[in-house]
Image (cartoon, rainbow, N blue to C red; front, side):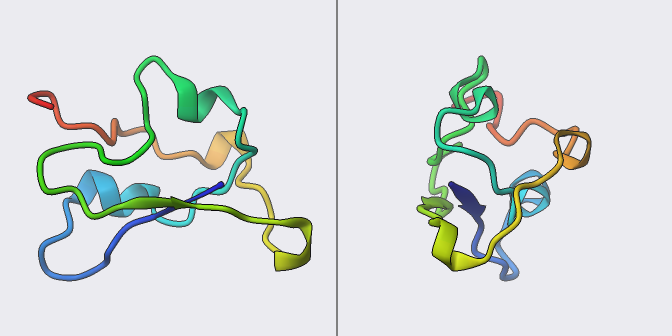
Length: 75
């Protein structure tokens, strides 16, 4: 799965940091805690996109996963 944020002038910095993170669907990074599957806050427009072997996407190295929480505290 790949985290996809809408990168426009309304995107939250913590959501933009996760844009493009690609990990297996059963990776603990998605399942948490905390749960990082969108929606991550009120009016969140982010989605998880399915990625297949034919998509030529590389997995994000665990050391390269952003060290920011994607979910807002009030959500």
